Amino acid sequence: MSRFRAILFDLDGTLIDSIGLILSSYHHTLAAHGLPPVSDADWLAGVGTPLRVQLSRWANSPEEMDRLVDTYRTHNIAHHDAMVRPYPGIVPLVQRIRAAGYRTGIVTSKNQEGTRRGLRLVGLEALMEVLVCADSVTHPKPHPEPVLRGMELLGSTPEETLFLGDSIHDLHSGRAAEARTGAVLWGPFGRAELESGQPDYWLEQPGDLEALLLGGG
Image 1: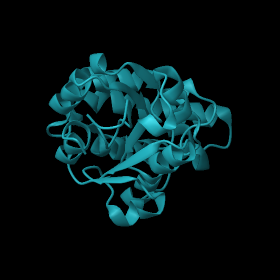
Image 2: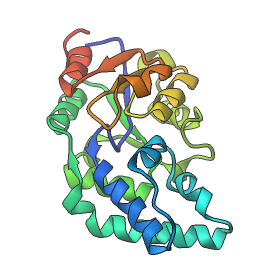
Image 3: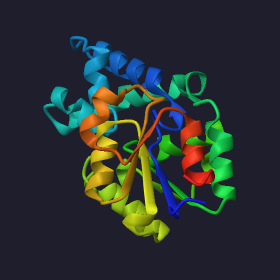
Image 4: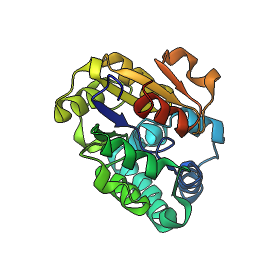
């Protein structure tokens, strides 16, 4: 087993492939409110930050923000189960990680309700000991608070904690918390987008994570 004791995972783009649903929900929200469209690249730049942060440029009041969020979530929930799936090999890999004795948790910018829905759909809910969600913290990613909270809940030090994520915001959050970080490249971003996050590990595929944690890496 590796020197790590605790593994913290981002959710969207790391454990579950929900990027298509997220983009669809954002596009639907702007269209439903008569707002001009925004490119996929623009939306993707904010993946890893909370929904309200992403939508803040179109909300001039709390009431407007609530309406935008409600539209997004209604569309997202309606299409969630048909569009979300685990990345290939992820579920059995997490099972093996848990069986090997690692502590596990989620650190995500999604709210707790949506997080549990996604984990439950793909069969990962019971494999996560703690959930740190957007509604669990005051300062979301890229602030270090979410990763610090995850380590606190699992009782692990930064040196023995690995935080895995697919976005630059994940890497900045983990690095600021002084945890070790792993950049997963099976999500929507490549090395060029993540290089500035200075991850400790580059993971091209889930098998690389298995080699690191279970293969003496």
